[in-house]
Image (cartoon, rainbow, N blue to C red; front, side, top):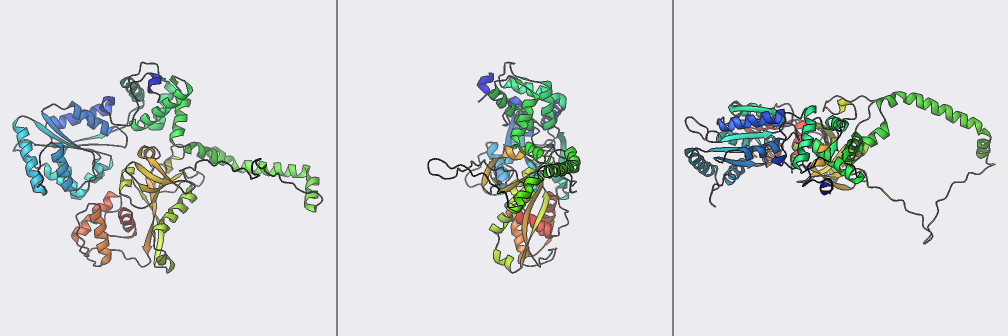
Length: 538
């Protein structure tokens, strides 16, 4: 909309990972150097990690463009795959003809090995790059380790690059992946931009977008951008794009601090303004007793001044008349006030009531009636990428930087009672585009993935209906409850057979499942582990 007005050839702050827009900050340049070194020197395994929106995917695309023509590359960006699907996609990306009858892992690996040997014999190299690698299941990671065995006596035939969020480091530290972790020769943690890099980043994107220098972000605006984004490129893009749209509407070419604040407010759906208007700052809370005392004194003075009129009212000598709304001239009906669209940001009570209502819609009310089933609210800590595995409604406690920091760190401690709780998102379901949330009126409202990332939160909770006499499941037990656990594990990619026996494979995979979601990996299926299994089950 605003691109032609400002003279851009294209919108400069799109969220798509276009390698032309890669800004080589100190950290991005070092990450790219590590990648090129690991690939050219045939180090085998390379791992690049970083927070959400730090530019990992853009860096990956830029890397592929910088590779020599002799280097064959395969890119995998859908990490929710099985080990067999991994092999199939790798062969497809390398252009290997597998044939219609190719179905087994051995056939896929044999064809891949022949391709790699042919590439190596002509002086070439091969790179497999997997984005969003933190979502890979343990069986797939083990299969990737096996691919690294494709080598000659002196050289690795394939260089495997794993790119993912910081939790990928925790995943690789899992004892069951020790062999894979020890093979990683090159590692780098991609950090957000420094404050001094924000100006260079913004100006770089303006130039690549075709800007002619007529659009300028003031120094105060750039400081406000860093304060909001903390150097996260995706957040910088989002706020700059919104700021340019606001400037276009106001016919301004200089982006001020005020415009940036308005853009941030718009992206939050007005949440920060609502919170400030409703609760005020800590100082207002400290002054609240004084304000209440002044209000009581004022009401007392008004009552004394009009004591005569009030006495007449209560004695019945004077009637009280209330204003009657005017009726419309056409049909005499009272005018219907216009209703504004309900907010998707809910308070504690509304979000909790909505969550229990959604849970009751899914539950068997007969079990509730006879007391066989109880419902409990189970809180967990989960990154946004793990939302994709959730199959039941849940709510997200929003992280609002304008509030007390203890409420946005994911700490298990309860915030001070003097600080108001930030808003919640009540998520009905996760979709490919983002999610469907429930607004304050109880209506379903679709939101994008970008919306979820901007209005993020790691504290999630959902309702889990559990049986009154539910047992803790431990290794060696037998029964239908074990079958249900095994079936759920199998659904989400763990190699477990539904035998009904809590055997060692079940025990080991329960530990991996617990570790992935941040629970104590003890292999015991207690109430919290059951609540997680319930959430990820179909």
